[in-house]
Image (cartoon, rainbow, N blue to C red; front, side, top):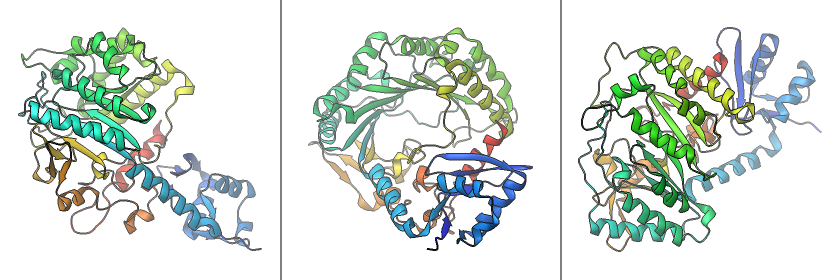
Length: 442
């Protein structure tokens, strides 16, 4: 019986640098570097797109076995079922995870110069808080999986509301293991007592921003009094490190200017940070600061992607050494992990005013005001405006169907910048190529 092997659309050869490149399968999570004759053979198979039994004689059996085992090549007779199964799994990830991102206040006790938020809305008034509490109760009780996130402003300026919503969600979730909560915070207002109470209600995920060593952080992240905040943030990280809850996970975000990349390295000398980097509950990530409508980069700030990547590699290597090789991060992200929450149908942002949005980046953009929370906890949604965010994804867009990144991106890596205006071309593929290609430099 003749078998035709076809190139899996979830597999890709990244445009190579020099004499080597990377081949990966985004579905199986496999990735490998190739060069020389091996690379030429794989590129030849990729150009063919399919092999019948006779064609296989042109290639080393060991190479073909590898590509078949890693599902880079798949049996044409089972391909339809294979792709259908993937789409069903992606649909579950898109539809069955319900999330509320609540801004209990938009005020902040920091005044970071690169912040894109207006920070003009104060704490939720009682009527809005009561309605939001009913919304949390309903979604927690009905959702297949429920996630409750806190954003701001600085959410810990309203800890009473955080605790109220956490308790409501926890008490109404039929299966406690299918409910989790997260917070994006500057870390300065956390206390051991608050952490103990909130983590008991499954607040397990924390994102804290620490912009490098003291001399860099205190330039970028100042309080309302204009003074540096390094000590307050590191204190918060220490509280998290000392928290005895084994289920918490902490993402420490380091925002950097590319032109000043090397000046962030001394953060790795802070004894509290080195301890946290050795804790398996912590991960550190470096992100370049971009311009916004409120902040313009100076010439001093501008630099190269290579400089930022070098800094990322230094942090990654330090963290790998601290934790050990068993905690090495996988190169390829898990399914739907690069998908933006704003493109998912059952995920919403709740403003302090009771307005409903989809995105936490363009908070004051009219496109983001899609409805309101009613007094009874129901949502009043403008369907046309909601469709702007959720109308296209990897399940219904023809262009996504042949993209190797569709499993992690799900067609909604960023709903706003998903396609170039007018021509329907994905803006994310090139960015992802560059991201994965950096693996060649590690």
